[in-house]
Amino acid sequence: MTMYALVSAGGSPGVTTAALALALTWPGKVIVAETDPGGAAVLAGLFAGHVDGSRNLRNVAYEALTADTAAAEIPRQLVNLDPTGTRMLLPGLADPRHVAAIDPAWPVLAAALAASSSTVLADCGRLDGGPSQAAVVTAADRIVLIMRPTLRQVAAARPRMQMLTDTSGIAAPVSLLLAGPGPLDAGEITRLLGTRITGTLPNDAKTAAVLSDGDGRRTALQNSPLMRAAVAVGKALRGQAEAQAHGTTVPSDLIGQP
Image (cartoon, rainbow, N blue to C red; front, side, top):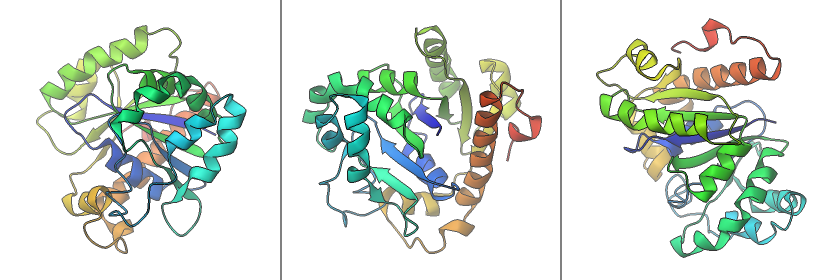
């Protein structure tokens, strides 16, 4: 299946919230993999600490002698995101002392995730070129850069997009995803960065509070503005991936605003 590396240019545009919104509206099997070296967030956030941290990425790293052994361990470390059993979470590293310890395992971990039979949404956090991000973006089929529509975010995104273009081994196309309102519109950002916008996720504070902090009930999530927008963004991303796989041009109705 397809692996998407979700990254940001900084400034906390909500990569984890976006990954969860996409996963909870994604058709078919999907895994949110917390590969952000800044630490795990979902167990303490969406799950409000009600799920223990015994299953996590570090346990997969211990089995990462080869991509096959890592891939065999991944299913044992997954946590259900919803009752369907098709939307899963691979919790990340909650203890910063473990980050450096698993650095050598990242190429194998990334390869195992990329070979998954499920779609993988890898939450990489802010793109800074560290070992985990370098391995994941290199193994990814598509990179999704999430940013707010501001000049400061454009300035932060430009060198990171250049880094993705210039770094040897990174061949995945970049999709731009806007988060919330801002002074720049999609056309201005396209002109400044040279990449068209895949879609926009609205500033839906109520739903974001549920996804990021477990603050509120999950029962009404599907009808919220954020989740409705996530449906359209997911469709656009899948359309881009399918067009990429077939070597065709992405239809314009899949790369415009949802």
